[in-house]
Image (cartoon, rainbow, N blue to C red; front, side):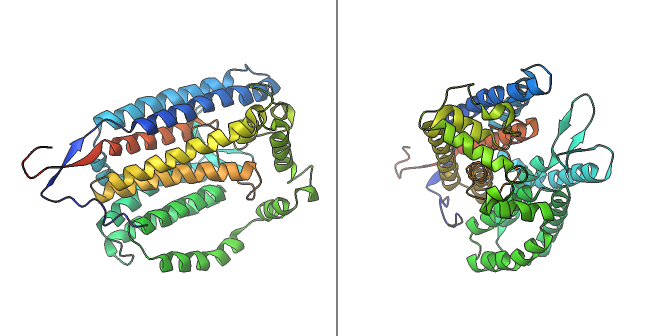
Length: 383
């Protein structure tokens, strides 16, 4: 699917500014509200186990939401997305700097065996790899909007930065985020008119390298995915408990706040496995509703991309939509055991201020792009 030859502007057209996409706003509001409700439900149980206020996680989530709303509103109404072209490279350097701080300084915070956060004390932490998603979309939308040549000296600095960012993300380790960044890059290149043969050959060449990189616990995850009962109290524990949550939810669920799995059995019920808690409390119907919301989000995002009058805006809209949509589908696939377990949150819904703020900023850019459309001018001069 190439966006390069669509919506060419000629002398009979002009660019006008329209209100942001109302359907996308409505869908996003639904998803965010569901996220706040789910974080309160799943997070309160975890907070009680940790002997802190039940509102701890939802309040921090709300702070991230408010920051995201302010940033999103500014981007929509006060900022021209075309200016992001000039900010792509500096922002990528900034993200690289944050990842270096995370990996090689005492500011790096380790949890669950992974050093993914910068800790500034007082409970203030954020995850630089979340910003990497936006940096990658900006950089590759910028360079491929001009042309799709791979061997271009002007693009080498972008490849170099991307490689360093990818290596630092893998060092954390955060394989799922690295895969998402790679998939987003290939997606943008393909929609810019890139060669499918190049993409397939790159993936085929990368597979052996990926297998060599896999660590012991990652191999265990793959083997556990094939047979969770091989280690029900170890590597298979989370996925077994997640599937139990789906089974308990049935068709209509056990009711909001009544999930049992979140109490003691599902350790990451407020983050990576929040979809399992939703499935238990709202059942099959609630789960399908979440899937439909994200599918509508993806469809509207792609529609915005096709309607945008300039190539940079098209690729930027596609990259943002692809990144958010793919991340959501990966999270749901993990929770329902369609793919091996990965530590990737659900956009807008999982607990995490860094993820929520960055996703809201990406949404703001997408809505900003949706304001730019083309109206044909009739020969007699009447719109």
